Structures are given as structure tokens and as C-alpha cells.
Image 1 (tube, one colour):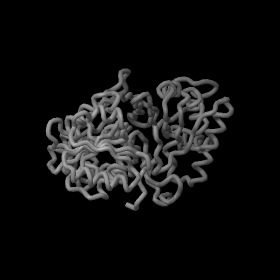
Image 2: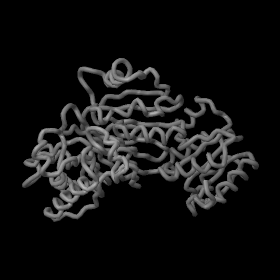
Image 3: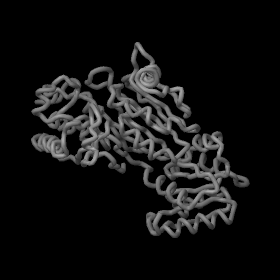
Image 4: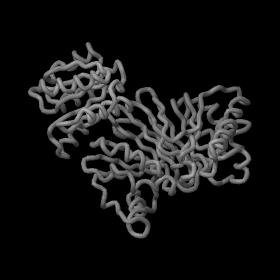
Length: 414
């Protein structure tokens, strides 16, 4: 990493009983523009944090008295320090120790001795992903490789919401999840909640290529709509192995748990986060998700048909349900695959047009609306033309809102 590439002014608190290690960390970080404070133990950490106000803590695990696991657990349990990421470091490379760090809420785990580059990359990754939403794929129906170098990309649905404590909430496993997995592979151990909206190919095809599934020590909870005839684990198993893919789910080395969901009035608790579900208008059982954390919320509804007659002259039926579900959200990601002209020819296919989405957004009033599930045949200009129709729909309703088209590789900080 080139000198001076670190975020100037970011503060790092280093806890380690080895003067040699503390000196090494201080030199590497200060050369990159970080401000560093050191302590030889885990004692009095709360006082140091109150004085120094660090953006991240790097702590050794094996320290006399209060060890790094205890420090991490205490900071995560206190609402005033819970959003400060803790990177734990240790000479222990065993999976059991990595899992213990994960359970304590560690944002990352460094095995000693680590290189300066490994330290810098880990700190930068943790700081850059404390509370953000990254789009790894936003095409619908089928990947479009010919669009890969355009503004909006060619991969199918996958979005990663990163919350404090390095908790990853991943929505859908379209082909974009392969790139996400490549990005995460060096960040073990990982705690991931993966949510399927439904099981159509463009939302599941990337799952076998998601590398964190094959890493021991990772913890991955997979959620998806309940099928009354087939267990979700069976649905996924049928898509891998046998006739359709040469590797079966038995190859997974992460700790994987399957949880079936359905629409319900009470939110689910997932890794300490409130998650609500709503069934949408799309072929087969399909769910929209709403995530609430720290006074902010994200609604993800990539496949949902808004019928024009339920949007004008006023909202009704399913359009009103999704608008109420999304009301006041910080970010709303919603299906907007068709132009108004295209929708007339593809009514009943389970997707929406810009004017109908404008009617829902005008009622829900989210902080930002992101148009999602772009048609695989649409050029950048066609995607943007649908956005123009959406903006015109807002204008005719007398509403001003922030909006944009989902763009592969973009991150929204919340």
C-alpha cells in the first residue's frame, strides 16, 4: 500500500502487552496518516475510549488480566461503544479461537505475526464498511455479460448490508454474490445472514460460488420464504449436486443454518437486528425485507409488480401494503425493470415500471429510492430513461425525493 493512502485523522487504539508489537503497529499506522494511542493491557479501556474516541480498536487476545475477548465483549455490550469495531489479534490460528472472537463481536481477526499490508488492509476494510450498503449485482432475470463494463453492470441480484460488529446481511445470491465472496474470503471469521427473496435462478445461481461457505470457522445463517411442500435446505440441495451442479451442499465447511420465513406481523430477531417480512406480488412465494438498526432502515423488494390500477388515482391493495411497509425507510430498493410502454406488454410478469413506483415512493417517503432489477437487455441509456419516468411520476404528484438507479459496485453509507 502506498504511503499516505490511509484516512487522515482516523484514530486507532492499540492494546497489546508486547512493546515490540505496539511499536510496529504504531509505526505502520502513523505512516499512513492514522492517529494512534497505545495501552499495554485491557484495563481501563473505557476511560481511554472516552478520552481518545477511537474509530477502531486493535487488541491482542492473550493479555494478562483482562484479555482481548473480554474487552471486545464488554465494548459490544455497551450501547455507547457498540459501534466501535474491534480487531482481535493472536498467535492462535485455530478455528475455535476465531469462532470465539466472532461470538464476542470482533470485526476481524489477525493472526500473528501479520505483515504491515495485512494490518493496513484489515483496518481499512473495517473502517470502510461499518454501516453501508453495497450493490454487487442489480440485473434481473439473467446475467448480461455484455453489460458488465457499462455503468450498471451485468450481474444479477446481490446486496450486502454491513452493520457494526462486521455483521453481513446479504440479500439474494444472484451472480453478484461470487464477487462479494471473493472480496470477503480473506476476512475470516465471518458472521453472515443470507436472505433469499425467492428461489428463481437469477437470485440463487451464484450460491455455489460463494467462497465463504467453504471456509471453516465462518457462521452463515440462510433465510428464505417457506415452502409448505419442500424444506428450504432441500430446495438449495436440489440446486447443487446431482444433475445441476457438480458440488453438493455437503462440501460446505462453514457452520450453516437454514431458517424458513413467512410474512408475519412481528419482526424476526437476526443477529440482534430487527428484520420484517412482507409477501410481494411475484410468481411463487416472494418476500420483501425491512431491516431496522440504530434508527436507520433498509427495505429490499427486488421483485414486486405494482399494478397501475392500485396506484392511481390513489394507492390501494398490494401497492398500499408495500408503501406502508416501506414508510419512512432510510433506503428503499425496489423493482423497476420496465418502462411504462414495456409494462403494457409484460403485465403479469411480476415486475414494475417507474410511474407506479413513484406512486409508492410518494406515499412511503423514503430517504432515498434506488431503482433495482434492471432488464438484462437494457442499455445504460434505457435504465436511465426509466429513472426519468420515475422522476416525472414524482413531479406530477408534487413530491421531491432523492433517487438513483442501482449501480453494481456502488456503496451507500447509512
